[in-house]
Length: 172
Image 1 (cartoon, rainbow, N blue to C red):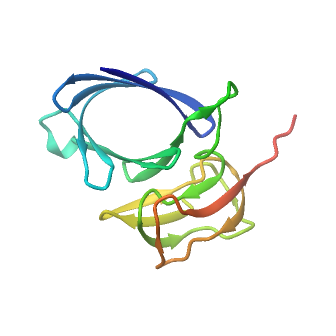
Image 2: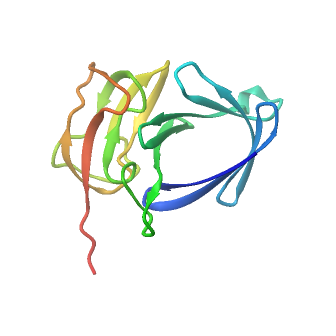
């Protein structure tokens, strides 16, 4: 079995191809990178991706979970939102559109922005604790924070909008 999907991250389309090797093992191509991974289904509907290696210290590389039309992936302490491209332009209907969404049900640990703040695409705006992990959430675009719905200490549901960033106007 071979799967091929395109995702939008930070406004760029990335092609991901996954080819089933055997058992839980998959060969995954992300752009020009090739990884041998084992996919472990989790009870919350998420998937833990583990590098197929004997070195357990370097093994766990990512956790992924669906959030509506988007897919949240946690890699090396950062949570990224991926969305399917729409139309031929490659623009996203989310995850790169400036909307910061809770990857899963959890507790807001920190809110690091306020309405009116100018932020970069990879700047952490909200930190959520879920499944004993901290998810550092970004908007995926540079711009100005339009609104913040997250409050430190509050419980949020998967897919809940935590903040919205409006893209910076680009000069011609």
